[in-house]
Image (tube, rainbow, N blue to C red; front, side, top):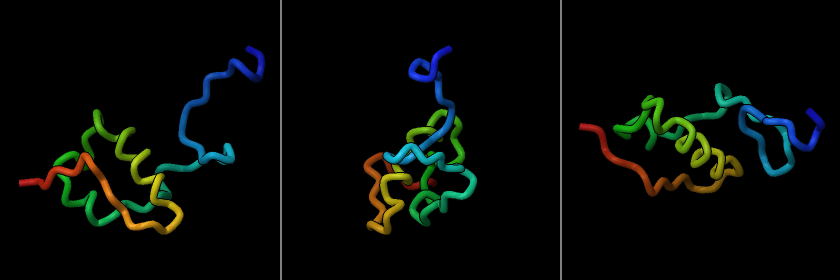
Length: 67
């Protein structure tokens, strides 16, 4: 495969720096969400958390309080 058509597996920031999901802090809001640790939601949750990396207040429109 040439470089332009390579499939990239993982996450990176806008500068194409790879981000290790294991090192990304999980906000307290995520810990009380019923979707926390749901494999079907993990990718979307990770992308939402990555949006708040720059120290902005964390907001998640998909948050659902766990029972």
